[in-house]
Image 1 (cartoon, rainbow, N blue to C red):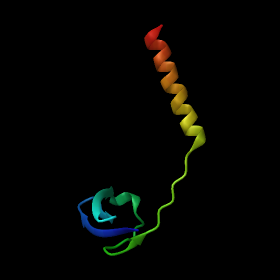
Image 2: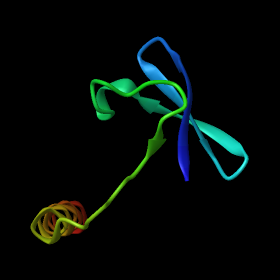
Image 3: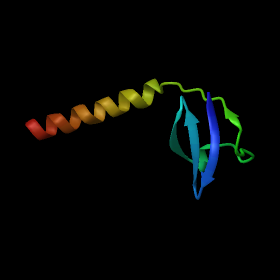
Image 4: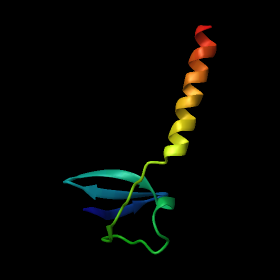
Length: 65
């Protein structure tokens, strides 16, 4: 469970498993407020992952040729 503990400037302090971390406020819904519980869903962008791997492979090839 992720809970918005407070806001500090452009960041929200998020409580998770008895510890906290900062998250850019711009990633939260506009109406988010202190005490709100956040639902977060993440997915892997397969196409962007492939592009990144291809980019790194090309850089390595250029470096070691």
